[in-house]
Length: 341
Image (cartoon, rainbow, N blue to C red):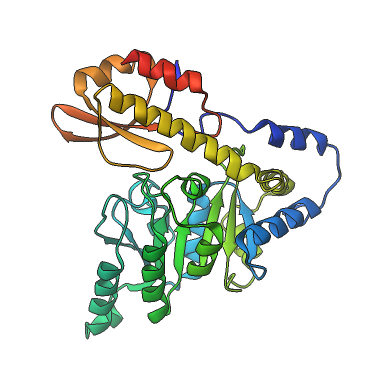
């Protein structure tokens, strides 16, 4: 079956598997204290042009979001996010489970805007009863967003300026960061993200790794005893080498960026083919996620031969599906899907 269900349906890039095999019998210190982890961190600092960055490797996106947010917030604080943000819509209440409310903001094709964020913060502090309320202690964004859209450099700066004026951190979920950075329509680079964000993560699970996310604190602001916090959350991997080796491979010879560029090329090929066939794209996405509007009957028929991600039903007669390309998508896969239409 043809699959565009998600960007983590394949295993891992062959270079990562090769490095894991080559290093398999090396005896290395555990818990991410090995030299592969340290070398990977140095390579990430260099790519971010942020020599002061503090980096910790974790295994998955929800785990990373939950630990980053829980470790940086006080018990009475919540995190502001778009109502369509992953932490708000698709993480099974993980943030709330650990005691922090998600303070929802309006979304604009997945994004939040600085004006509405500022309004939220102003309203909170102007409320004379704010001591009885959940304090907005952090701001969460994703790049690309859940709708495959991107923040511009100007938008990032505006959000960063608001956060700094209220002395709260700006956190960027980078589960698909590589695909955002290599989009043909972006003006945002990795050093810019390190400049404007207080903490962000570089997603590996969806960008060529078996698993793994690199959480980056950019302002010498990693919470004290962070390793202990990670362990309290049950997330400290004894064989931390597995993550370090993968990110060492991904950040050698720009592999992370090159395989991300491939996914974008396949997405553009898919988009072009869909438009030529007269199909309607639900929104304009410049990244590896494309959202296709289908009549329900067409959707049901396609499901027999292709795996797609259900997204939403805008009306009783139509279904929006997500088609996600990845580092491993082949041109033949795109052509075979288009032939089904």
